Image (tube, rainbow, N blue to C red; front, top):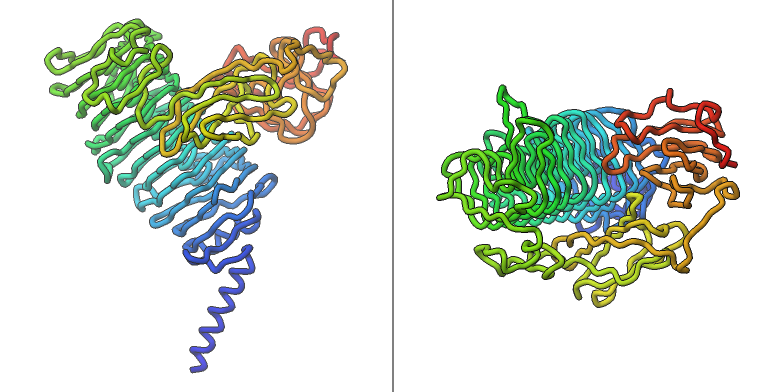
Length: 605
């Protein structure tokens, strides 16, 4: 009896100690631990199978973070934000969480302003959501904004490697880069039959081999009918060594059902072995998909002692799946001799059916490439203006499609219609959308989502702006999410000055502001420059350099299309930084020089 009392006492003491580490709760599904501070979030490490709810926004700025793992519990962020995480150790297995294994559920988590430099198997939210040895958990309704991750191989926004699934997960204005295999928008590698439903990636993906807008490499048959469904990809995807896909770069040889259905790709894609939906080679059905971005085939894809010159608007190589009810409205271009392109699919294995597929005949010279068989391949070249008329298309089920006649190409019936911008100035941006519009994301030309609250009522939306949130003449991008629908096509609008008077600024009179190359005042992350500590900078008129006068610490954030790595260092002020935007060289300490070494700076204070 004494031993029983002692056991009960120890259990009670453990419960009290655990509860003392959190804002409340006992760690059960019905009474989860409450997480309100950075210290409490780190304490999740001690209770990896428990349940948690986040009750406040959490700032991890200047916190030395130890990734949480191996987590098998339930974490509900309840829409609260985790922000400011910076890890630059270059180690394997980095992320907010380390390993997430079955039966874990991570949901309603919002991550913002995070920056990670790792090695292998790294993601912003977690390192591995399961892997080839253990099944992963379920990530549901999670968001990552304005963040970046760099590594070597198996790198993704949500997970470097995944043996689990992602539903309703969105990476918005996120940069993912790796120097090896498997660089993906949601995950770099997928194992154990996981799926990706209703996921979005908007940002930049840069790899050297296998880069994909949602997932780069898929290994093993999917456990459900549709591996990728209702996913959308925006931005830029690049690989220097191939292969590249707007949704998925490549499945393994053991895959037969990496099916892609109802997905849209608006991204521009470049590399060898490139396809708008799938790279080399597609091993599954491709049903009801479309690609509007431009594709650049940079070289022959060399792999497994094989040289493959083919690239396609929808896929580079089609191994075992029919392609139906799909279109490509962009352009596909070969950059070097010997590289071949087609509007739908490049190289096709015998016997594969292609039906009701359309391509921009101004953007591609042929519909199907190697292995073309008119008896099996039903493709149609269409002029760009005709692709803005729904009657041009004869899909098998037209009830699945809609269009804004004369303005858009077809989009899905379960996709949010493009938003209309009715007002766009330095004080306010407003417009209209569908009656069930739930979320509007506005991204400035400085590559940062606007943080101001968006008011939405009966389909009308507006965002009130503060000083320097946007500047006159910049272009903003607007994307809408209606209830239970995919995100919209992008709408772009140019910002006007609220007063109607052109802005002029005396840069000599404002030493703590930021100016563009024409001397106009701009937001403080011009050309991807992000201030992490101290005051704002002053940018000179000259093309390739700027002067830092009042700043203690500084970081470069890569803008889309430029290969400038994040780079942190301490400055001795005043200092001039030389940036060669005309090359893809990384910034080095040798490029930090004194004012006297540069062209005349008489216009600077």
